[in-house]
Length: 164
Image (cartoon, rainbow, N blue to C red; front, side, top):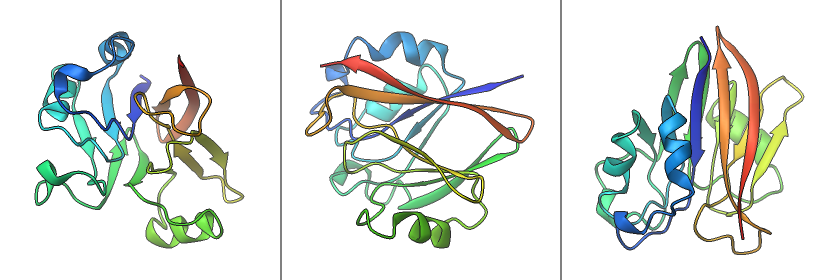
């Protein structure tokens, strides 16, 4: 069986009621939700949890979640280790830095920049930034990502364009 993880970051919402309608069909199809921080509004993770289990890390704008969420975590998805952090630091040296932080991760999910990224690593790992479903900033569109895992393997990664 393939685990379908909906990967989200940087929602930056005032209230959970501000979630974009385009997210709901994706949430309904998810087996698990991974949120890479900057949730900002209380209730967002609870709303996501109505659809699937949620794993999240603390972002730099997550005052409602201080003391409740870790800054970094690792999650097992059917034998695939996914490391999660909000801010991966500067672009220069990012792969090496994330490997130091998550040496055993098959995938490292991060956010903060709002710029979607799916980058395979030389060692077979994957870096994944889903972008943002609500604040595209310098990205051309709003985005999230799918991470598909089965029997200890990453079987697919897909950046999903939610439109401008």
